[in-house]
Length: 593
Image (tube, rainbow, N blue to C red; front, side):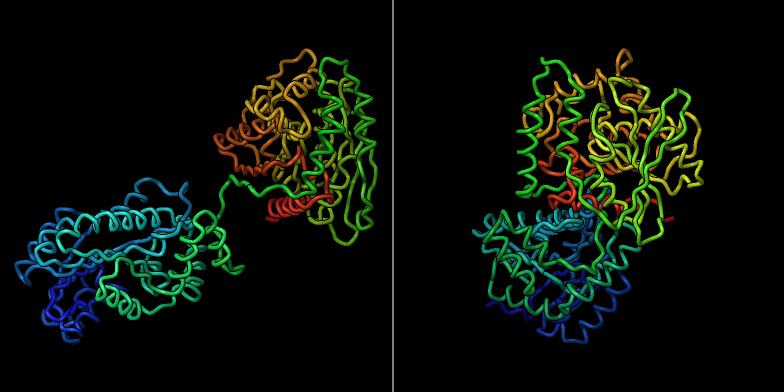
């Protein structure tokens, strides 16, 4: 057992929190204290408290722990004024919270410089003294030096580094009689969180700190100091401070692969503010058995029949097969009204259907353009999804039956989509209350419509929501080949051959045909959904990346192993239900201002 009386203890970060509590606890045991902190005003007050508490001697210094030269000078002055150190508590630290992708390298480096290099520099500076005295290094890591925590990458990285450093030097120094104790505090009520820098904005900061101080950072620093000093007395290698640290450390060692899920449940709190997940999200869970069944059915009844591209193209056969298999669900709470627009300049007459919830006044409008390779599908095939969207969002959906290829190749579909948008404007619907949406070919058509609206100088809609959009009819995406076997619906050859029926003799890289090749500057916010095994996955990924590069407020949501445009299968499997609910929330949010 180690006695602290008359021992010279060096403590960094001594002006507050655990450092202050260690200083006062050691003072009561008659230690000689060398206190350091960058905050001199508070440190002077702590030094006076320590003298009054019974410390044999107390000196204090201003110290930037990220400055190696300052450490060397500090070590020399401690030896000159107090003598050689017996114990060194490397406690100084800073915190920063936020997503890794939102933190620049300079900010990341600052956290590492203080939390990790401060320990390295301090250990190096006092090593000659501690070796001669056969003393103890007490290096403060964290609970977050044992487990990874989202939104704390900088802090976790620095504290994991301290842990690794401790375990290495412990073995190196053991032959000299030097002991190394690694301390991992859990939720201790200190100022490190309150003084943390945040990457996510002041509102999230205040709410998160309030919740943390009430629910997680609850142990008094004095209790933490008591636990630490008890561990040092017993020459423990590792000291876990708090039941939270003990519990999560246990799960981390017991189940190293699955402990993140346990941590997520442990910290789950519906009232806690959530970090913004950023523009790219992925759902990695395995598909539900219903989703798998639908994928198997599609692969057997659609892909197997039409994958042989050497056979003549029979649009009517495909249309009949698709219409026959579409299963409409009765929705008595949604009123439907068929509309036929006046002939446009090209002579086409656009057909559409209004879908409106009975129980609510409609807050906004969704212009929906169905998919089907520009050759098949209709309002009917997509009605389950669009009507559910109308009901859940309190929106009126105008679903469009644009003219189909090969009878009506480009630009017929785009002309009809533009006519439908102009119809909404002529009806007095404000553009800022309109969301344009579509899936597959209809998703690409929605993007092309945005480019056409911009070209004509019309008012932009509030936003666009694209489901597995076909944005590159030239078929240059890597997923055309890479996902050809995995995709439940299509092969790459099916997609490439199908493009010819709409494009005809036009250039497939015409932005009004393949919006991937367009200038996306000035487009409204866009959210994109796509499955990870679709042949059209790269059409979504590349369009999203190009939109971001153009300054568009774009989101990408990739779902694991879902069939092409899975929300269309609402309500027959859970992933479709979840996504439709998200679509409704998106259209509400984008049109609420």
